Image (spheres, rainbow, N blue to C red):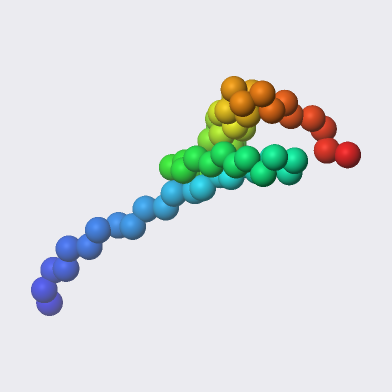
Length: 60
C-alpha cells in the first residue's frame, strides 16, 4: 500500500458585528472559537466603532 501524504485542513472562524442604525460592519477571522477569541473580537469591534464615533448601547 502506498503512503499518501495528506495535509490537514484547518478551520478559521469569522466573527461579524453590524451596527443596526448605520449598517457599518466589522469582522475578523479568528483561529478558534474560544471565549478568549470572542472577547478579543468584541473589544476590537468596540474600539473600531468608537474610532468612528459610534457608541454601543443596550438593546431595547
